[in-house]
Length: 260
Image 1: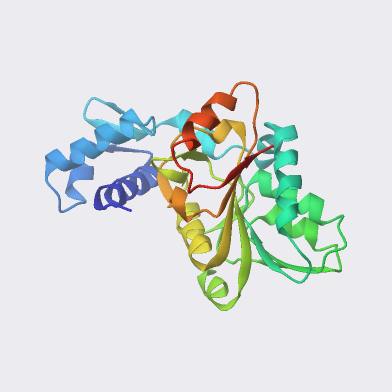
Image 2: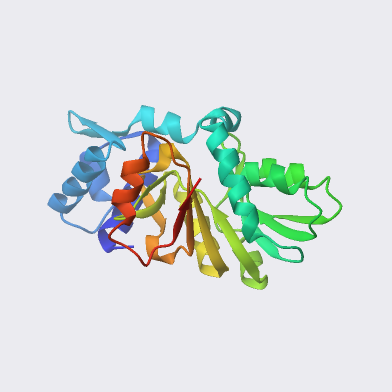
């Protein structure tokens, strides 16, 4: 991540904490020039992450609402496509492996499929719903990553569970971002979620990205994985995004993807 993006992430952390701050107060928190910070605020505003008015900057409430959307509501969005993504992911999973599922509603669909399969697995996850579901399967050993519990997203976030990731040999990590573009890679809004997912990418042998139609062609706050760090993209195709998928990947033959 560039110095500028790291700085903008810190600005967003401030605004997430305080909701609204005077621009002069934000500037005073950093050892950069006022012009640099004002430019960062302009960039964040153009991305739709914050709003600016009368010398103040504030979190864009519509963006925050989307990022903290109730988990059960998220499972209903593009549900059929997420089920297809989950079934496509199954071809990469074999018995006796250690896999990782993030806390996304898409990976929850993978957990639902796994729960019905006769596979002996270790499943690491920061998803409360996935861990709770898989605990009933005697063939599966679910391991919940420790950290800060986000009730809205039913996720465990932050780096408190990092030591766990360093000690296990993870065969496959299945990751679903809040947004994806080739330019910014896989992105998420929650800084704590981004921090944890960056470590998931680092300590997993193979990375599989699951992209539902609402994630394609958008950017969120911070990148947790560059596109070329992903071993396989699985993308849900609809009549509306078929051309978009082709245009994104046609000039990048080194990126492996399938559509479902």
